[in-house]
Image 1 (spheres, rainbow over the protein chains, first blue to last red):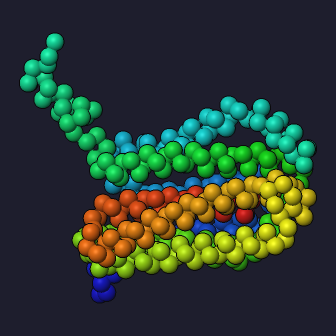
Image 2 (image 1 turned 90 degrees about the vertical axis):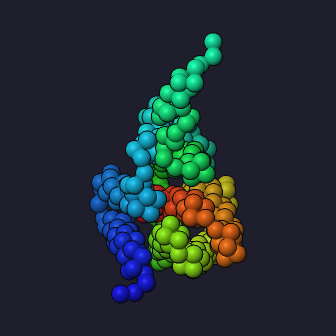
Image 3 (image 1 turned 45 degrees about the horizontal axis):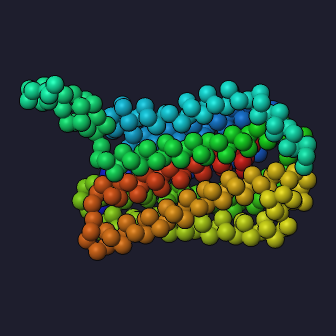
Length: 101
Length: 206
């Protein structure tokens, strides 16, 4: 058995392979002709799955206390709140900026 | 009124009394998590701004006509691979295997350097086609601005991450080495990878 396997690196290699597979899946979704909303939904799903794997295994969140894990969700929750709160105004502003060219 | 010794001990023993560690991590690691959470919001603001721009733009350039998608995919491969190797460096450091930890750190640096070099090439190509913050040949001025801000801010993080890793690798090579320091550097590097996962999906593929 190699030194790599002795140190338990195989687990990281498996996650790496999963990430590469999901990258190829995202690439496929990007190139397949489908409704924009469905494409966005699929890409969000694949992206969150990749982020979950990186967070849980590479950043070791699965072995951290739940208090720390919950803190890492703050940006997602805050971003969603801000997104939906300012959506109306910001869409108008963005439309004006786009129209100005 | 001063607390008695018994009351002080009871307070210190409570989860938030200061006498214990509620998050179960070192202060350095916890501060890196706080930084990551705050920096995530900055990137979220940039990506959401892009989303708003994209949703109201009557047209948007086809990415595969502007960028070399094989190059972008290769960059993604390099960064994900460097992230995996960084995780191995942390694993080796936690087991006290200094030799392997240093080797993996140098491999992580190699992956990050390849990514940054590829991004510099991509930028030079984009600039060579006359794209600026306010003008580009594809007819949507905000396309260039969003590209430069999003990838530039991320690239700056990659550059600082490489310097951080270089410092950590050199220190580890000299024997000034702690597993905790390698893990802190690793958290920052994985965060860079996470941000790129979002940029790759939403800017280059959507």
